[in-house]
Image 1: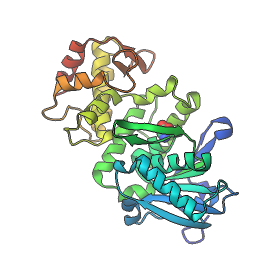
Image 2: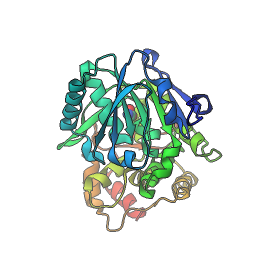
Image 3: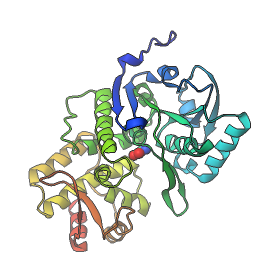
Length: 347
Ligand code: GLY
């Protein structure tokens, strides 16, 4: 417990991520960032806090309880560059951060990806703790160990698997999020309704976040380095990535995933894998989060179909993760005409 805030780690929801010697806990709850001193690795005598201007401006600050410096990056995904990693590592070195010390990344997915990757390569790897402050970050980027930055040639093309030593998902921070950022998280949350028979409807927000983290943790524990099972986490993402790559629609990642879920369900139905009731369930879940179930206005079906072929997960032609009698599985060999016709069906 911290004397000033009265927040106790024990009152947060604890979700273990079981990865042998790289195991860690994710803690979910209001104000849980105030428990940061309890999860700082004992050997660390200094902490580099990496955060984003918007997070600090929203009053989301942390005190690791030991000597620390705060490194504030710009806002947005564009901070994820190799140049930013070099800048951070040089500042760490000039300050004298050692391999026994730690990085704490405070913010959404862009900050935890950047801060996590800087931690992964500085001194060939120092410990990192994530304080996740966005819904999307809490249920996705903060868990699983993939860290990295973008190249002009593509997103996340340079990175490392580097598991954090603890993750604090502060649900109080969600109150400071702009509505479109919250919507983006809800789109990713909708995805979890269809993985692992998750009964999320009866849960309050912190419980729901913890359940999503638990589902992701189970998937990551089964496939840390993405050689199979992890692909289920890409459910709804093939159309989402195409919409994002086309770059002509005003959609956040999770909003694109939400439409992608409905598309995947319609596609699975046309491929004979699920019935109309299951498609309706997808529409109901996505609509229940007040997210669009339709393609954005003016969407170019031909352009989207050709972008499906360029999806980075496409190893054997276009691969869709589709629901079916045995759950969500990769499906290849779908005809372009079917892909296009199904796009028309969700206009
Ligand atoms: N850091 C996100 C993941 O590993 O999936």
